[in-house]
Amino acid sequence: LVGVAETVLGQRDRGKLLWSDHTCNEIAELVPKIEKLRLYRGRGGEIMRAAVCRMIECLSLVKIPLTVKQQVRLLDSIDANLKHPNEDIVTMASNALFALMRSYFPVGDKGP
Image (cartoon, rainbow, N blue to C red; front, side):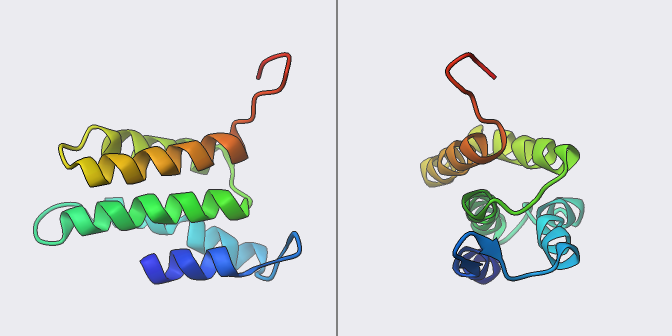
């Protein structure tokens, strides 16, 4: 997942995405698929949480086109990770939250 996240970050070419809308949508749906499979539990759960946070951060930095439903779903994922007892995961979740807010929930001089 971290490899996909870093690849997403590297595939931005002068403001234009190099992938089709279908591919972007498949990448955006990785986080909900991970949650559906409950990969946060058991061995490697903390690593998966950190990877999901990095994925959301990279998606946001590149500004992959997301539906409002996808944006809210990613926000819910971050919210769940902000409550985690591991400080490293909370830090990564806060980085993801910052990137997500700047990219998809902008606030202008006159408010949202």
